[in-house]
Image 1 (cartoon, rainbow, N blue to C red):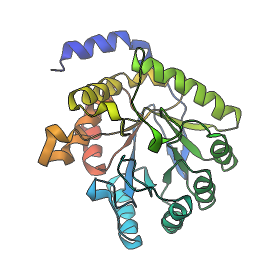
Image 2: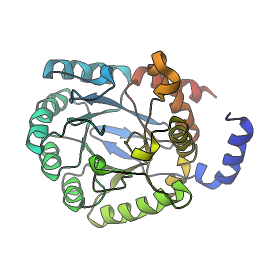
Image 3: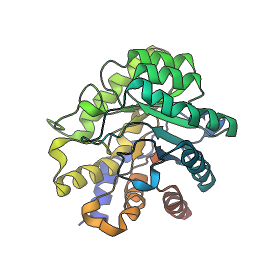
Image 4: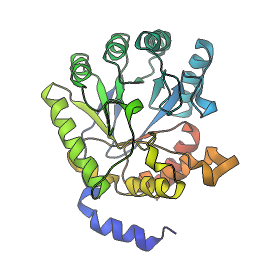
Length: 295
């Protein structure tokens, strides 16, 4: 059972990291002030294989309506994707992804709503940036140079996800030889150096809590890994850039109340100084963060 004593021990060990400041920047037309107020990223799934049914949009009309709702609920930006990251999900060809994403990007630009595009395809990233995507949610590990160059050319932001493998659909077991946060820290340090050398100035780091790994199917092991990463995420802020966390679901424990899972994990992520919360439950997560801010 997680206790105040556990939190106190983490706070003492990570005291310097908890005080660290990160770079603040604009995403689209919105200036985000991470050091004083966390931001929220809503989700739209254009893939029928995505299991979080509330976020799945089966046509353009549904997607535009959800875009408007998420914005009204308080999302600072909206992440859209055309391929599920689930292991059994169908692959969506690069060209088809672009076809699905483009109309929604055009509508978001007309409505002045900042949009992030989740992809590991360079061609999709290039075309989406041309259509006004403010952020590329980069679910590729190796071979990201072309995408980073495109992000720099458009003065966009990038979310550097922790991926053990070529990209999110090509991962196997999650392997850590020692402290997972330390391993991820070194990975992000290398990725940040590569991105900044290409001219990228707006960067988030994302530990990839929502990705599928074959050896994290045991719910206890997976949830412990997620909880500890959330509580220790302040360490990543010492890299100088904001931390993005995708909030998970712990369906085994929440069951019929699964829509309450992401707000629960938002508490742990907030305690660990997360800067950008990726969530399917924008209004619930916003309520949690606003309540915590009262303290």
